[in-house]
Image (cartoon, rainbow, N blue to C red; front, side, top):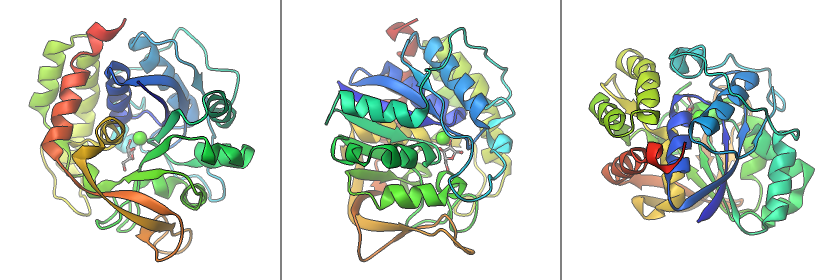
Length: 313
Ligand code: BDR
Ligand code: CA
């Protein structure tokens, strides 16, 4: 079992990734940490608590940063994820409360308690990860891996021509994280826009997992509508959705689904290209996913998430 901490802004595809991770037999979710991005951080924390409870997990949920490190905050992605972060499928009030520690402190404490064992899986802006590194730079050598959903290296961005949303929300934090010498993997739009699921896939999930599958199927309808109607920089509208955040979780359990190239990455922190993740000739090498077996990722997501009801709860 691999121990993971998911740093998340739930978020419809975040909810998919989190339920996949809880249901996956090879993963132990030791905690969730919340971040702004798709929603403001109090909603992200509430949703993370609700997702853990739905999955029958009592893992800690620690609240993260409310704002980016340097730049003014961008509006949240309510137009993609709904006002409640779950596609306006309805607010779920959790019964339990958040961890007394902030996200950065929780990350530092967890890595120090299990040196060499924890993989970080940030699927939102990288503010909490940068703050954890500032709090205790020694975690860099004690982290098993950092598998980030974010960025776009050979493909256009999704909020601007250059920038992917998670990096665009806090490019200065991303720059600090990419400059750190630790084992980083980047699961960006180059691969996550290739991995897609359809309405039929989520109907099937609901049939096999009536509790968690039906929650995801309700939430994803709003996400489908966005993919059906909104322009995308690299893709036309289509019926279905990109599987951004679940792809990062599956890159931890099944790296063989992806083809990687090692390259330093520089994050643009100014000007028209702010938020761009570009190859650099010097710096810390990052494993960048450039190709994916999309059907293998889709099938694994559906297989494990369809078992979500029977795993717990
Ligand atoms: C990323 O941004 C958010 O909208 C998604 O949850 C995903 O993490 C994709 O660009
Ligand atoms: Ca996300």
